[in-house]
Amino acid sequence: MNIIVCGGTGLVGRALVKSLLGDGYTVKVITRKPLVGHESSPRLQYMSWNELKQRPELLEGTDVVINLAGETLNQRWTDKSKQRILQSRLLSVAKLAQALNALQKKPEAIIQASAVAAYGTSLTETFDETSPRRSEDFLSQVVEQWEEAAGAYPSDSRLIKLRISLVLDRKKGAFPLMKLPYRFGFGGRIGSGHQWMSWIHIEDIVRLITYCIHTKEIVGAVNASSPYPVTNDQFGKTVAQVYHRPHWFPVPGILVQKLLGEMSTLVLDGQKVLPRKALEHGFKFNYPSLKEALEELHSPHKQR
Image (cartoon, rainbow, N blue to C red):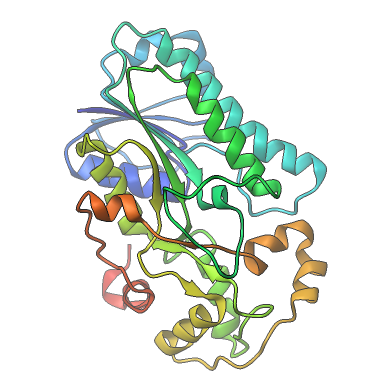
């Protein structure tokens, strides 16, 4: 099977490419970054977005396309950075759609990254794939436009919109920063601590993507989140338990707002998201509970 991965050098992309190669697939990564220290294999190729534009025929014979490309959210949200965050997502979809529509044989499936921000934020509601999208803040507006842009993909390809939650990884992404205060003995709830955190272990999101590739009945929105979301306070207490550190030092929400500006919504607001579609189609999480996930990430025997 020939698989294209756009954004294959990011947090999820790197882990996914490594897994796909291990499973024997042929992978082509479309990226804008230099190819230093990347996975090496005779079944792995890299191409730039410019090359894709000039020679879309290089994608002929592709069975599945996975688009994870997009500017990181982990930066201060100025007007310019917010524009980059939005445009990077819309442009990657537009460029990829143009190339795929030019192919004689369209891919069987397209998996397009999205985010659980599609549902907006709430302290009380529970969301699954049947919940309506709500465009009420910057992130939910980005997701709305992101998912709408995916309508330009070939209509005869099975389209999956993977709504990604907080991805927990040992070394990369947000989690190493989130656990840092606990290492120094100053961990605690952030803001009220009641805000919901929907999350997924890096291994499980990679496995879920592969599951979506092979489960032809899965189509449309798919929540990439654990079946057991937790509140911010519960998250911190679990980190403290697993890493044997105290959970006692609360961080006022007003301080987070001053430090992070509008980006503070990532930690002060949240949503309780359930992976209904994945579960209904038989997907089994290796790390459904936060304690299991953190114990694996903390294990010295499983360094990746």
